[in-house]
Length: 176
Image 1 (tube, one colour):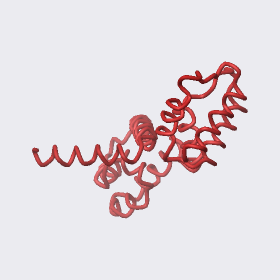
Image 2 (cartoon, helix red, strand yellow):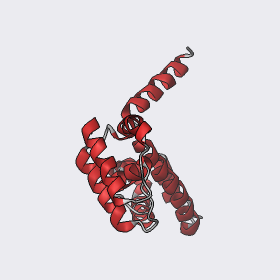
Image 3 (tube, helix red, strand yellow):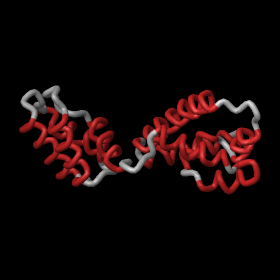
């Protein structure tokens, strides 16, 4: 999104939300800040997020940039598995993991794989004579929920910042 598009979004917010007014002496600065926050998103995505916010929020207050970003990411994550759907995949994989744990693990979606840990965990659960589905399900759901939340938050971090974080971690791993 470019500066003019950011300005249009802010003008739309001023018209739509009577309590949202940009101070005259801060117009350029406000546009710069919002532009920095939203530059990685298309005008269409931000515009649609604002429309969704206006139609669903009842507070009467304008959204923050973070709220619009959250709506954009929620729009794009429509095919995400809920916790029970993810657990059902894991449970079905456990059934066939006494001899085929690697193949079963490889079939799982990436976030479900992260929550399970490894094919060895599937194998261990398949071989456990005292396997307690309620306990395992509860543990999996807790871990899966945390991983999904972490992933959502990570996706909201601008790419340039994620790149800097990876570079810093690589330097730290090298001991520099």
